[in-house]
Image 1: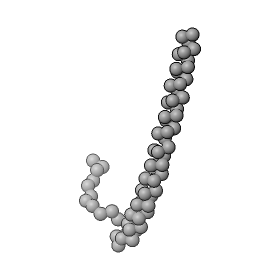
Image 2: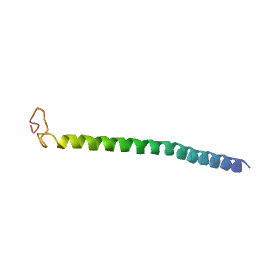
Image 3: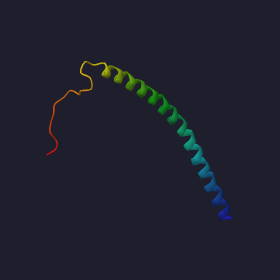
Image 4: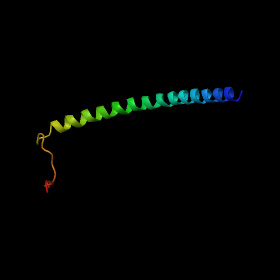
Length: 68
């Protein structure tokens, strides 16, 4: 009898864990899709402005030799 009750409790907890995981995964997925689209649009906008600069593909900044 004790094994049956333990088995039922374990099955209940496992099903509850799976359901809660799915419930949490759906909002995280929606958030990731929205954020991914925003980052993609921002990246396209930045690459368009970078490619139209007068310096071409040269990155501005100081040079430091790191081969030491």
